[in-house]
Amino acid sequence: MRADARLNRQRILVAARAVFAERGIDAPVTAVATRAGVGVATLYRRFPTRDDLLRAAFAEQTQTCSRVLAEAAADPDPWRGFCRLVETVCALQSDERAFPAAFLAAFPDAAHAHADARGGAERDALTLVRRAQAAGALRPDFHPADLGIVFLANGGLVAALPGDRSASRRLVAYLLEAFRARPTRGPLPSPVPLRLGRLPLITGGLRGGVRRVAEPARDHSDRSSATLGGPDGRNER
Image (cartoon, rainbow, N blue to C red):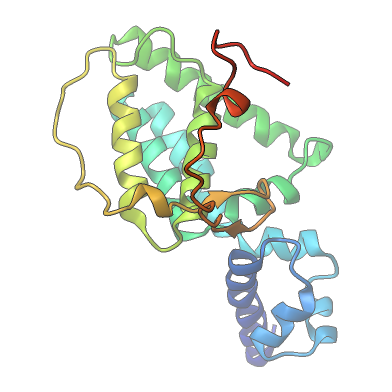
């Protein structure tokens, strides 16, 4: 590949990660081309389909996830490996907000070419969880599927507070402490200065955006019976 072609390819990938983070993975590829400063035809010559662009844009992050999982599963200290996996993936979510959705879109369940890789990842995760439980470090009722809940929760937080890694670090510290078979009550990362009345709400699912819901107008009338239930506590319709 010529030097100018390599430079264009790199520009496209950098632009794709930025556009997908800002506008979601359904953003038009024309926006990527514009951000990269190349023509749409140039983009399509390098990446004929959106999936090709997604895979290439987040190839490094995908490889990092696979490597960290394999290393965590092989760590002589299973709890250390477990913590490293959770912390690394959650940090990656903070750095590349579009990566989780891009990964799911680029590697759908029906893609047989990636079935072996997914199966290997699931086996590594199961091995890691079982080893940490056998060592008495991870609570016995933790299920490997709970890792998905962790990453979904962190992904929602990252989407709501882009650019603020401190909230993600505190959430991860809370979760890891809760997962310990014997909690240590160690210090958590510093609290995040958030006002509860101004929290953003996620309203569009994995591919949706974030919007701040306006506070409702104050109504001094007592409507608790209509909204929360009647005098006996039962919901009324």
